Every structure is written in structure tokens, then in C-alpha cells.
Amino acid sequence: MNKPFIVCIVDDDEIYQFTVTRTIEFHKLAKKVLVFSDGELAIQFLIDNIDHYEHVPDIIFLDLNMPIMDGWQFIEEYISIKPRIGKKIIIYIVSSSVDPIDLDRAKKVSEISDYLIKPITPDKLHDIIRSLEAL
Image (tube, rainbow, N blue to C red):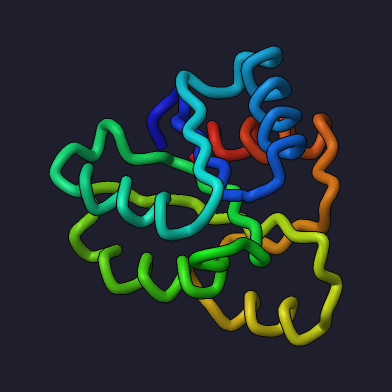
């Protein structure tokens, strides 16, 4: 995987967006952070940049509960455009939901790397991104 990364946060919680963005920037974990408040905006960005993989994120931290297009709808749309995207994207669900149905559903989707319960700590974020550098 190319270093440094482009990280994408898809979450409607502005405080969470700010906190994660600041953590990534402070620790210099990415060359760029993209932030979208719903899945539709994120999918549209991917579609708009489908021929420009250098702008497409390497890692997506995806919330499940959002207005307009939730995380599950995002995953469905992502799967449909994935073959046209010129690089591998690692997707982490980051949600406050501890519902076993959500956890089980995420395990069944091969495009989802892991399911993380909010809040994601700076150490955990650091560990995730650093572990991907070895890929």
C-alpha cells in the first residue's frame, strides 16, 4: 500500500470528524484527510475520481448511522463501483452500535476489514494506520 495514506472519514458527527482529523494530522498519519457527512457524498466523490486513483482514499472509516445514505447503503454502492476503482481501499466500520446484528452483518461483507466501536482512541487509530504500512 502506498505511503503516506489518504484517509477518509464518513460520519455525520462533526465532533468525531474534527477529533479524528486532528489526531491524524497531529501524528502525521496521512498525507490527506477527506471528510464526508453522509455516504452519498462519499460515493459521489469516489465516482467523480474513478479515473484518478491518486485522489481516492486508501482507508475509509465509515459510520453506520447517518442521514441520506447510511453506512450499509454506502457499502452496497461501493461494491457496485469497486471493480472500476483503480486501487484497494481498506474499509473500517466505526460505529457506536453494539447490536449483534450489525456486527454479524459486517463479518459477512468481505469489503469490510473490521468493526470498531466508538470512540476510537488515538492509540487505536495510530495502530491501525501504522499496521497498514506493512502491506
